[in-house]
Image (cartoon, rainbow, N blue to C red):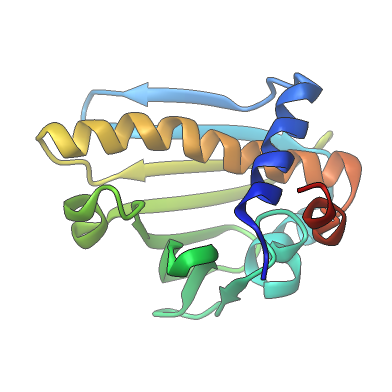
Length: 180
């Protein structure tokens, strides 16, 4: 079984690289939102595959994934101990966008149950592919505010991992397992 420590090792490796290419914006008006942006040095086809296939997602996000690119399909990360992340695909436009109802971590039960809306957009640029995530649907309350702050960092790490994959190649999860 995959050890969560391997994910910590990957996060530490990414942090050590010191690449601050992910832009994070906390938005208050007209509605509360999180906006993440990164330009990945890869073709649009390759970045789209990384998000929309199990094999592609396993190259950067986590070794145990469910990816069903269809309306109502799962986009789920299966962490050790039965924990999950990701969400349910609401809609998608091939090579352009994916909209999902995103699950917050288990530590935020109300936010996880109610979910937010996450819209990933993909755009070919001269230097690669620009990926943005706009996360909306935030409500009022302490748990919602804590989840907002937590996911501002957590989703930035998600984008860091995507960037790392395309700068350094697919993550070798077996090597990270051995690092424990």
